[in-house]
Length: 421
Ligand SMILES: *Cc1c(COP(=O)(O)O)cnc(C)c1O
Image (spheres, rainbow, N blue to C red):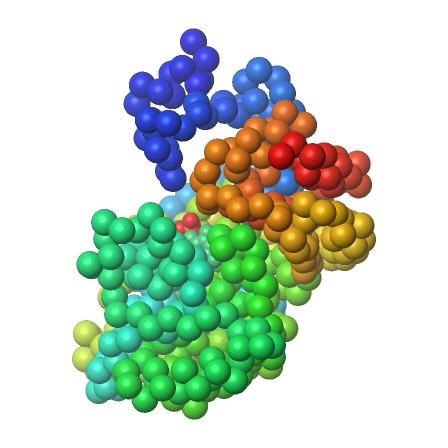
């Protein structure tokens, strides 16, 4: 029996309406930028498996660091104990994170990194004797699927059943050149009428919204206003982190630095799951007290799992290497010239790229998970390219190690896809 057939019996897939969805494809092997299915078909992984495997699948260096760690120390409770991989990772992160970040808190996925960030912000104000009950977020953002993360996500098309249980959130549009003045007036009004604790945002690129970019200067103005009102700024860099925008973090493009940063996905290079919520010294200090309850009583069993930490250390070593930095700028350049080439196509509404992120909006209306979108997905798979269009947006975030030929294959298949509808 094929994996596909055996899967049907017991497995419940994420983001899937099992009554109508096509059967999942059994993947048996991955290497660098390639995936192979159980029938022997080869695919170029154009989105690095949700932007995790940025240094390539089954990367030999990462495998060797993880397996060395496995033989030394596999897992230990991280309350009351510490270990070298966690300490070393914190030191490595300090060298690349925005300079105001001082403390590293460990979680196990992107949603829980955001969840911990929100809880930190709420307790920060609580510990200071101030009740602040409102969160600020962008329209169309995505921050994960736990309750706090869902609440701040603006993309809650399928979150209907849970809406009544959400945290209190006020929403603002992403800044553009045209709406900034109006937006700032609205934001000032929200700040005056509510007790805002934190602003949760994806800096510069909203990933799940279809790689929507926003204005650096505008974001800077919003952050400035938040800082003036003592609203903690929580940058969700789960997607943008670790080089994808061309800098180590999207926040590095900004002068005003976030109080809290959420990291996951490429943090562990696609090998295992882990996430981090980093913060500044003042945020950490607000939890220091003789009273135990003022501490941050939030934990995950696998917090700072040593193998995950070893993987993350290896990932940062690769990220900061000359070779990977060169790969990133070559991909960025190739994206820019492809964008220029395709921009005037009659089926194309808009194109944009930043670092290794490329997105193209089609000139047609499409549902987020509608049939035309499915048709596009299948077309790409037939071409040997794995891309997951989001509504009428086709995007790619290829692994840094993708070859010129593989990248060219993605470009060609995107161009071809424009003539199937
Ligand atoms: C993927 C993602 C998350 C959620 O991460 P999970 O590991 O899937 O829980 C949160 N924020 C952003 C920006 C993401 O891209």
